[in-house]
Every structure is written in structure tokens, then in C-alpha cells.
Length: 103
Image 1 (cartoon, helix red, strand yellow):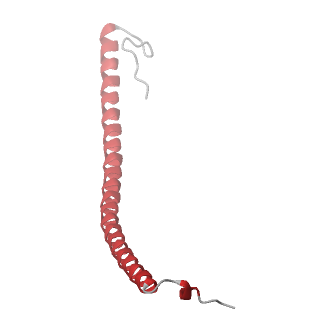
Image 2 (cartoon, one colour):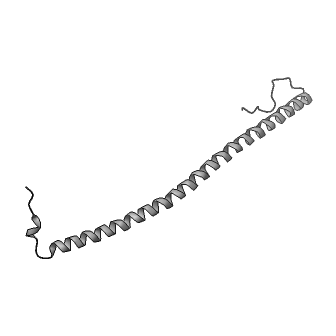
Image 3 (cartoon, rainbow, N blue to C red):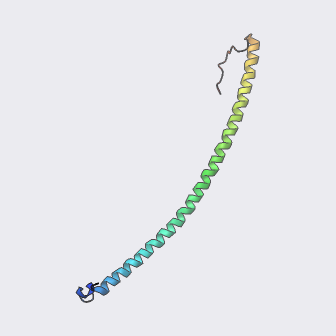
């Protein structure tokens, strides 16, 4: 029981409505193209950023390892110096003239 409601429209109104729908459809198509283009551009930016973040994490990990190695070497040298200084000053083992560094 469908009714034809277009019969109540003024002359030429249906044609104007269809023209407007076509314009809306064209504008929507243009917007969709822009969205697709921006999505592609954003994807490449995101991929590049993710790669840089991964590289940075790797560099930080390497730097931490180097710092730990250097800290260990400095601590060893300080322990040896404390031993020599203690021997010269007559300090016994375990009595620290220089405050120990906690690791």
C-alpha cells in the first residue's frame, strides 16, 4: 500500500530535488577522496614515526649497557684506589675513609 507522495509536489520540484541529491553525492565523493588521501599520508607519517621510536629504543638500550660498563669500571678503579689509600693511611679492610658508592 505505497502511496506516491511525489504527486503533491509543485511542478519541477522533483527535478530540483534530484539535482540537489546529485550535487550532494558529488560533494560526498570529493570528501571521501580527501579522506582517503589524508589517510594514506597519515599512514606513511605513522610508519616513519614508529620506525624512529624503535631506533631510539635500541639506542637507549645500547647507551644503558655502555653506562653500566663504564660505571663498573669506575667502581673497580675507586675500590682499588680506596685499597691503596687505606694501605697508605693504615686503614683496615672494611673501614672506609671514602664513603662507598651503592650500586
